[in-house]
Amino acid sequence: MEIAVRTAQSEPSRIKSLLEQELGFGRIFADQMFCMRYTEGTGWRDPEIVPYGPLPLMPSAMVFHYGQEIFEGQKAYRRADGRIAMFRPEANAARFNSSARRMVMPEIPVDVQVRATLQLVGCLREWVPEPPSALYIRPTMIASEAALGVRPAKEYIYFIIGSPVGPYFPKGFAPVRVKAEGHYVRAAEGGTGAAKTGGNYAGALRAQTDAKNEGYDAILWLDAKHHRYIEEIGAMNILFVFEGKLITSPLLGTILPGITRESLLRMARDEGRPVEERRMSIEEVTAGIEKGTLTEAFGAGTAAVVTPIGTIGWAGKDYVIGGNKPGPFTQHIYDTLTGIQCGKVKDPYGWVRTIE
Ligand code: PLP
Ligand code: COI
Image: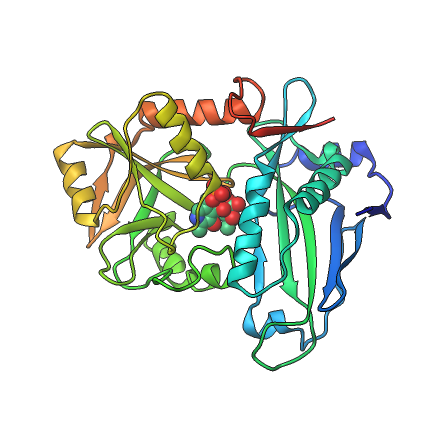
């Protein structure tokens, strides 16, 4: 597959001044994007890197009506040696295909996705800010066929855009307040919780908005059947240090199988820390906080990296973890992961792909 490059390189001084402002998360967009199209029977065609700009879509395009859409999130990091690095891009590509199967959308071979990503990031190298900021990469597929029947579309657009980002939570590596949600649910068994599809996020907005109005930063989702078992946070998985063990929800189909989550579990096991993937109820968590046996909690995800959780709100009460300070394991795993991503810590796993 030959990728046609149909844009000129951006003016480095213009990009530099854009990167000097407060980046926030997903507010500024790099000026080139990757795009290709799919038609049933013909397959994927016209892979190209083009100027970032509007997509021509009919108002009847199926994505607008029934939400047939999937996406990914990954980051390109600027290393001290000036090279740009991606973290486990094959894992994101594999998860994209798994989301595609769930949403009856066409898969894209992993090597094609990775090549498209690396080539785009190569074009956008000037857009990669210094750590802890990074260039967030958002591969997306939408149903573009103009039709209103409820069925899988026959035409799709796949695009990849880039956005220089600072921390996902404005306070950076500082403890956040999450609200355990006892009424609304994010995903039920048999649903789409394990797919990275827009509807999961749209369905979460009511609870998220209410929680923000109550002074929380994010929702901690509980399982849909019992409204008891911890699942994940709005845009990240959750891990606990409980009785010295690292504990996180198992992958039972309702949570997103996070690449950060999996990487941290592997690193912790290799350091000799006991790791358990098991269900924990909100009662067990709050009792552990009160007894002092649950010493740390943190979120893990590409956008949020490792985010300490200082408070869990449940049933009208706030439970404060570890004196509302990042715990020692949280700090250590944050330093190690970001060190590997930025080339400051040796990568024994072969996770990092540098772009020459
Ligand atoms: N859970 C949800 C709902 C997410 O949106 C994300 C972010 O991608 C994650 C977990 C963490 O996944 P990853 O570590 O692969 O970024
Ligand atoms: C990511 O971490 O990549 C995410 O997708 C979070 C996001 C929904 C902002």
